[in-house]
View 1 (cartoon, rainbow over the protein chains, first blue to last red):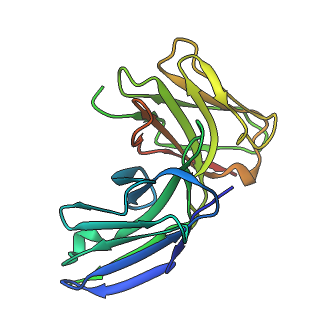
View 2: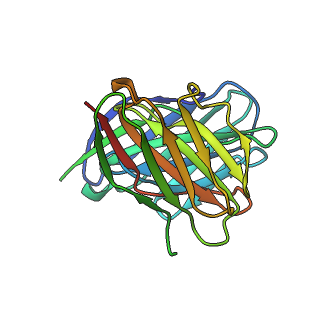
Length: 111
Length: 112
């Protein structure tokens, strides 16, 4: 089963613009993580935000978490063509449960 | 090793055959996860090992799927009597203290 729902499903922007992807989930969580996937193969962990955190930064990435709305957003600033990939949110729910992934957002950054 | 290694990277098999997919996690990572990803979808959980034992196998779709991790390191996902619907990318991940998973590059299984 998949808990997270990313929005939009696909996003196309020009290089230099900011990209914002949203994720909604259904149950209470311990943390929420964002992953990147190139060409449908291995995923790369980008950032983790805990349920008691509201915002986190890592380089050009900014993640927010609103537990009252059960939603998160990933902002990539000053996008580059190399940022073209699929981005997935994944939740670690309360208790010792494995990550549950959403369906992802396909980002295309056009040079 | 430096990363999670999955072999083979691609596997084509005939319907009804048996296949084994191998995952070599990062040395020292006690948790190991198998996921399956179909085209255009997110990874779907199959099974999770903590050490040698399967801590959660609730994602295995049916009894044709089985996984082992006999020495708490390498894991093998076994699929019997493969069906065309089993075609997908099978992803393995490992983690230390379950903070951020490190994924392998996956095995693309095609059942013809």
